[in-house]
Image 1 (cartoon, rainbow, N blue to C red):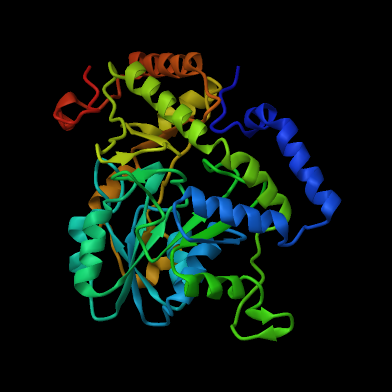
Image 2: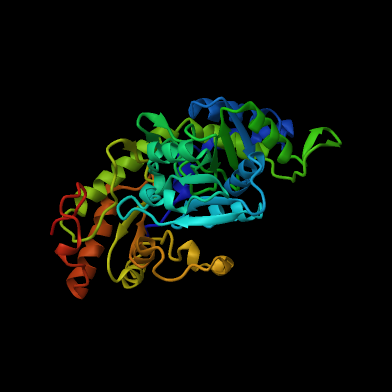
Length: 387
């Protein structure tokens, strides 16, 4: 049987009556744009994140964009962000006419390398975007300390980290404002696009609620150059149902990750690092191995579908060629881009399916002998895989 990278149908079948009731409730009330469901979800998600305010929008990309607008980031300003992230993080900055300034990632967590941030700060730097990649928080204490010294903003891109913690505090509450995505495959996913901004700042919330609805202060009175970027009622109703299960689903993800660690401990591959002061919610389970592309095709032939997050670092994307970066500028991200592989992980995944994936790895390794040498890895890492 096939093992999908994500299987949303399995999740739907587990909560089908609640989802169907929620959809029917919205249809009956005809509250398709805004309304009670959106207001209720905003209150519930803010409370879940231990934040004061939530403003629902139509995507995580717009959530980041609106934060930049609310902070008056403008043409010529610079915003620091990791080179190893989804392009939406950078595009939100570019949409302001501002310049994304890239920083390499750590070689174990894949999050931004905080030791390399300060050298990128100039008189034009306006903010740092801390991306909590793959479900694990970035090193927020260091980022906040740097930002405070240089009097610049911190923005959190928490689009992959719903429910994650950094030092017993939920991500999304460290920065002046934080962006979440509810793309269907996320830990908290809608049945279409959706996003939200979390903040403790009432003024930022008010501005984003204007921006998402044509810059409208009241009907037909427009005080901002906004757009149409509303979270619709159907998606909000679906998210309200799913939010009740998020913590339990995250625990199941962590259990599946533990199964991977245990099952793969005899393979000479590099497994993801989890820092002790962080609660990783495993939006993705990303390994590193040589001959990644050959392995990916081999697994596909076995009916096991994986992903790559992300195969092309941002400085190699054509859209950012004018920034003048070159090969070798971000060695960790460049190397990992050719080696990383995202394995299936979701709450409904079964231990026997992980065993099947492990057996496929064994078969590939036995036939190909393409594993990286033992000496190439840090043998002191708690998740180092000893052969």
